[in-house]
Picture 1 (tube, rainbow, N blue to C red):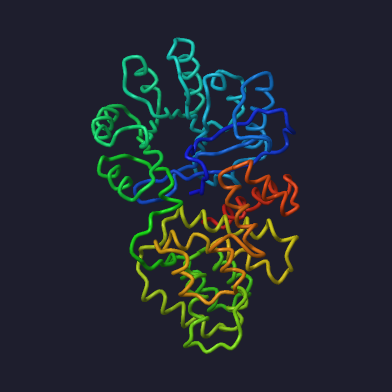
Picture 2: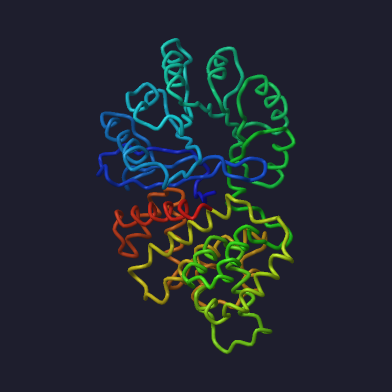
Length: 422
């Protein structure tokens, strides 16, 4: 999931006259009822001047940005094995650029007013024959658009624009077609539960990035990962390999630092990083602790979408600041990034979460207020997730980071997380 700063989660293209090599990328997960990621809606900006889409004389240049990013650069770093939902207008749909995209991985999400004329339907049938799937944005079932619905594999329902009392009838009507229904702009737990009851297939929205604050709960690491690390410890693997495992799971890192900073452990020094914690704990004590963790935790791990967002944010925050902070502080940037979603994971306000940890003051400042030495890097990472150009420029300029460096760091972070197989 991805944090967004605007109410509109859709993928947008800015077809301005700026340099075509600047692409700001965001992605928001689309999940199933078990909160497993099935795809991403991708957010693109082709320059840093504004957040609007212009389809004029420079349409071709802007569309080429999309093609270069998804095709020429490859898709594994951005999507892994998931689908990509790309917003397209009728103008884009009928352009020659569509054939340059990797059809089997792409869902063309049709936005705006679409006239289901014979020429458009023929074009869609041709693209479908090439392997493309279609999603209709907030489609209502009418005589005029039924031919479009028959060609679609997905229909997105905007929960903010459809009255709650109409959702049941709309879902029932759409279920008559061979398609999947996606609830969009799911912003509360109640909305998520309501759509699950109505047999919606997939879900997307603020709730999965910023869950509402409920009662406190425990987050648990993935059992398979704990077992993997346990095996590495037992075979005396290099500490860097063990550290890498911890960086794959926010819950595991949280539990480690909470444990080692506890009063009962009796440390006289402040733990500054995950590696520092591992070296102090030692292999024997770490093995005992991991064994206890296997026995005492259950299978209710953090939802995958939220976990992936946190780990990506951690890596991106680290990369954005790697040239601007001391080498010994880079791991703190990673901790700031992944722990910035602990309030969502624990469904507890951040100030209460930090009461359970003993963290350096500059990390706490970043998590609570986006202040201090690390806070601006975290804020920039959050802006990158939503492709918020205005905010990216403001923060990057303040940190004296070139836009190209921001892009490079974001792409590297996305690639790193996909390589982890999270």
